Image (cartoon, rainbow, N blue to C red; front, side):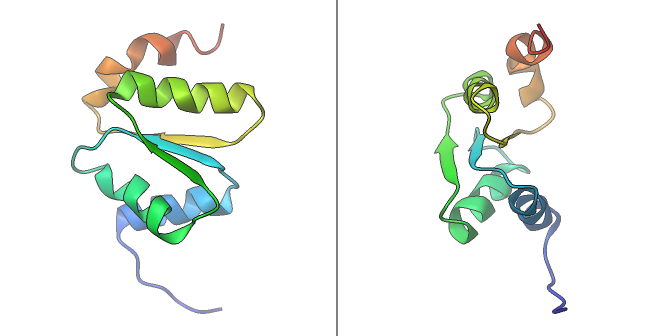
Amino acid sequence: MQKVLLSGNEAVARGAYEAGIRVATAYPGTPSTEILQAVADNYPDIYCEWSVNEKVAVEVAIGASFGGVRSLSAMKHVGLNVAADPFFSLAY
């Protein structure tokens, strides 16, 4: 097995890929910007979308999930405030 040195964000992207995601969304903002960028740069078979805000990013990921596709939505901690409404009502 080959050892690879990755940043934390690159490791998140790699883990998401190995978990089988097919959709990745994000709103650009440090420190999470590099997650979607790493997915887009390294895994061309995954649909990547920069969204207009965190709420839209999580809604796209939720829609993909409802359609049976594994998805990832990356955002910084403050972005979860913007995405809170669809995130908290996801279980209903």
